[in-house]
Length: 221
Image 1 (tube, rainbow, N blue to C red):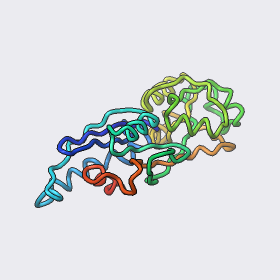
Image 2 (image 1 turned 30 degrees about the vertical axis):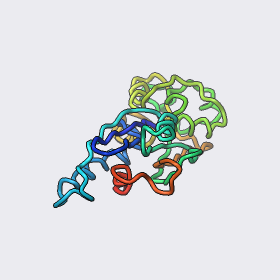
Image 3 (image 1 turned 120 degrees about the vertical axis):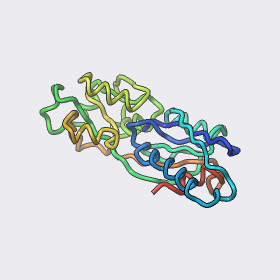
Image 4 (image 1 turned 90 degrees about the horizontal axis):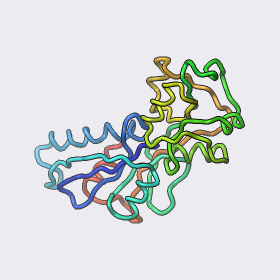
């Protein structure tokens, strides 16, 4: 998380749900796929199976909402991130990510190399909201609810921590450029397992729905 979303593909019978919204872990994997898929349609002598190229529109939601969209039918597939496989839908692992604890250079923890799990559990953090894969991963690692200023998007979490509001635990993929440029500083939390798995999910059928949804999944590296 994750920012997640629903992608609509006019010209097809159904819609496609996926996480999106920069900068987020899942979008770092999935967002480049859509242009590549459209390019294949454009370069082909004829549209695959006689279908027109899809017009993919992304709408933001969190992991819990994406699972709900897939279960209820508005979305054919979804992409989620979190510590465990969602119960109910079929799923396929498409990547790995980890959460990192970060602070702005002006924060009082900026000179520290590491913090304990107890310190992190007791600190006011900036975090994604309940229902997001990121929040679930952090709560599972700490085995406790997290005292946090909740934000509805990964971009909002990043903005808040850059303003030195508080520490944040956020996707490494989402803040890789900030860490490299020194805008944020990573503080190790060696006692915690903050790895999370990126998955694509769909309904209870053995294979993802045919058409745009299956085409999109097939283009994920």
